[in-house]
Amino acid sequence: MRGALTVADNGAEPRPRILNIAHRGARAFAPENTLEAFAKAQTFGCEMIELDVHLSRDSELIVHHDDNLLRCTDIEDQFPGQPSYFISDFAYEEIRQLDAGRWFTQELALAPEKRQGFLQSLTPDEFARYIPPEDLAHYASGAVRVPTLRQALELARNLGLKVNIELKMLPRMYSGLTDAVLDLIEALAMQADVLISSFDHEQVRQVRQRTPAVATAVLTNERLALPGDYLERIGANAFHPGTEPLGLHAVIRRLDSEPIDALRRRGKQVNVWTCNDKAQMRQLIAAGVTGLISDYPNRVREVLDETFAPTS
Image (cartoon, rainbow, N blue to C red; front, side, top):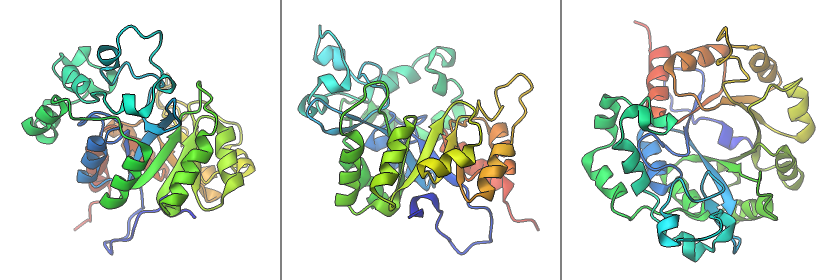
C-alpha cells in the first residue's frame, strides 16, 4: 500500500532512502505540469513527480497548478474577451488547443530578477546544461500542451516514475474530483504507484475511507499541533509540510526537527516542499526527512550524492 512512498533497492551501498520528487515536473527546466517537464524529471534520476489536478467543464481531469489558465497558457489569445479563465469554464477540447510552453521561454528571456520567483535562482550553468537549444525551440514552437491526468500517469508508468497527485480542491470545490481521480488510478491499476495529497484534508480522509490501497499525504504550510495524531485520525501515510512551518524561513532560520522525529517514530513519511536551496536540503536530510520536493531535482541529486558519497 505504501509502494509509492518507497525507493527501489538498487543493490548499492545502503543509505537512507530519500525520495527526489520533481515539483510540477522539473519545472525549472521545462514548462511546469507538462509531459515535457515530467520526462525531464526522469533524466535527473527522480523517483517521483508531483503534479496538480483540476476538473474541466466537462469533467476531464486536467493537470495544471493554478485554478485559471492565464499564467501558463495562451488562453487569452485563443479565447479573448472571456469573463473568466478558470479551468472549469472550459471543455477539454478547448483546453487541449492551448500553448503551454511559450510562456516559459518568455520567462527565461527576462533578466533573472524579473522572472517568476522559482526561476530567479536558475544559474547560467544550469541553463546551459539542462535547457539545450533544441528544448527551447520545442517549448517555443506551440507544440506543448496541457495534459490530462491519464496522459501524465501513462507517461509516468512508461518512465518508471511514481506520481504524487495533488488534489486542487480549494478554492473551486470541484464536485467528484476525488472519486474521478481514484477511478482513473484503479482503471490503470496504478494504486501502488501514486500518492494523493491535498491541502483539503477532508479529501485525504475520503481517499482513505474509499480505499486502503493508495498512499495519502497531508499538505500544509502551517504548523500542526500533534501532527502524528492528526495523520492517524484521517488515515494519512505522510506529512508534506512547507519549509516555513519547519522554521527554515523564521527569523532565526533554525530547523524545528521535533515534528520530523515524532512522525518518523510513528512510521510516517515526511516529504518537504518546495526546497530549492542546497543548504536547506542538507539540513532537512540531516533531520531525517524521507523526501525533498523541488523545482531543481538536479540540486537534490547533487546534495544526496555529496551527503552519501562512499568514504575511502
